[in-house]
Structures are given as structure tokens and as C-alpha cells.
Length: 245
Image (cartoon, rainbow, N blue to C red):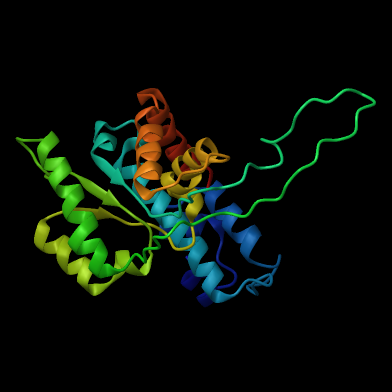
């Protein structure tokens, strides 16, 4: 789209609709946010930022078409994942630590506590991703889907270096695990980032864990306690977000 506008600043919405197959609302939203009215000069956005916006639109269009706006049964074949920090102790937020006091009583004293990372810090690399993480994922899938295995499974992950490295691409190709695209710098379009991780961290805040095993057990318990309905709502929300891009 950007190439078309750059080559012909006088191009009309009708021509853009014909050339790109984007609907009028998407075109108006993109052009009004990205260009100064009456010219093809970006409104302070860099070419990189404009390219990222186009990538977001393209991703959403591909996903909505492929999965029938989220209503396709193939949505259940999507496997999405990501990495995040989990702390041995993560202090409660101000909202979580609020408490009632009598009208004339002095406010309670709040002791500021820092996060505790424990004794184990791991860096996610392509080596770890392809020799530890993904093999475990594939084994788990094959144990649950004895007949089909990873066939029809579609892996969705973001553009972190460990996910896009040549070693990772080679592993995925050799294993037969197919992937879905993801636009750069778009955590709002990654279910783990906009829903799962915030939910889990909220549940673990204010609790102190002495060992990695204790923390891991609490984390798995929190994941296991999530009702199936909430997982479905997450994916419904995912496709709703795509429609609103």
C-alpha cells in the first residue's frame, strides 16, 4: 500500500481498494493516521513505523480470512506461546494492597519491597528453543494426539530473535511444524502478552516462593485452574482485536 501511495500521491481510495483488496475503512484509518492531509508526507512517523503498521494490517487480514473471522474450527489447531519473567516475589500493586481504614485513622504504613528473582536466570536462545522448549512441546502434542500428532498444528510465536533465528527455522522445517506469521512490535496481538501472562502474574503477586520448584508448582497450578471458557474467550478476543486494527 505504501508503495502505491508513494508512486502516486493522487491515488484514490477506490483505486487503493482495487489494488490492495483492503476495505474502505481500513484504508481511511491507515491514511489518516500515517499521512498529513493533502500530501504523502508521513506525520512524524518513520518509514519503519509505517511498514510496521502495514505488517499489522496484513497479518490481521491473513488471519481473519484464513480462520473465517475466528469462527473456523481450525482455530483449535493454533498453538501460541511466548516467554516471560516470573519472580520468586513480585510485590502487590497499589490497587491490590488497598485496605479500608476508619475515617479518622492514620493511613497504613506501606513497606516498599523489591522483586526477587531467586537464584536462576535463564536466557532464551535459539539453542534452548530448539533443543529444550520445542521438543518438549512436540512430545506433549504427540502424546495428546496419538493419531494426528503435530499434523495441522499451527505454531504462533512473536518475532523474538530465538524464534526467527536460522537454527529455529531449520528445526521447524525439519520437524514439519508449520507456523503462522506475526507482525513486529505487536504484543497486543499475541494472546500470551495481552491475556495469559498478565493474568498469571496478577495471581502470583504478593506471594513469596522459596525455591524454583515451589514457584513452578504454583505457576502450573495457576495455569491449570483457568477454566476452558476463559481460554476460548481469549481467542475470541484475539480475533476481535484483529478486526479492530
